Image 1 (spheres, helix red, strand yellow):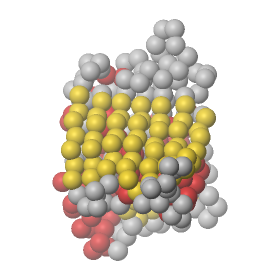
Image 2 (image 1 turned 180 degrees about the horizontal axis):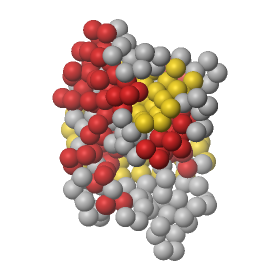
Image 3 (image 1 turned 45 degrees about the vertical axis):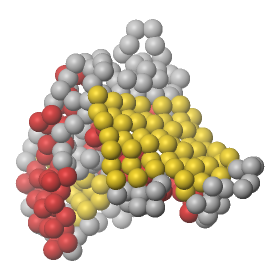
Length: 287
């Protein structure tokens, strides 16, 4: 399958690297032409352009990766779908749910697949946790508790992520969506949603902490927190059942620079959470 990449920054580069044999990156687009050229140079025969339309209009491109800032995700995904392309779009796929309605309708009409980049589902520890959970070994689900946090980096408040118009939201939209996706993976759909977002530290327009309380129709609860005021990177997902609990945790890499004086904690996210553990704890109490 021939692939076109729109958005050739860090995420676009990672997506391009992930394609295995039988797939070829043939076109790269970015508003910064030099970024497109750098990525295209890694894929023999690929063209580089600053015009996303030049990628979308290619008949030989079957799959498009959209890895831009949030304000362009939904529009580019819709344009690709309307041209009959399958799409992998970077999370959160849009700034707000209303932007995704036309994408969903168009994808159904065109008969193409649109997938959001919820890559945490493919982490080996989380896949194993889900395998254990779906086997029934942990019994009926009672609740889920999850945290995801990092400490940011110098100048982060000046990035596009800090502006509502471009990002649509802060940490809950940026990283909290991973927790919501994982909670739905383990618990199914939620019918009741409560939450709160706060700006405690960063001088920008969006939240730096988000809290969500989700409830299924059967009464199971997920309590989630996403934060960019965790001065040491953290990740924890615990699914508690009547028989056992399954917990996946990660700690920050011990090397790298955060940009904060006197610290050793690296600022980047899940890819740098180097020590990942999966544990199962059984209920010894009985009923």
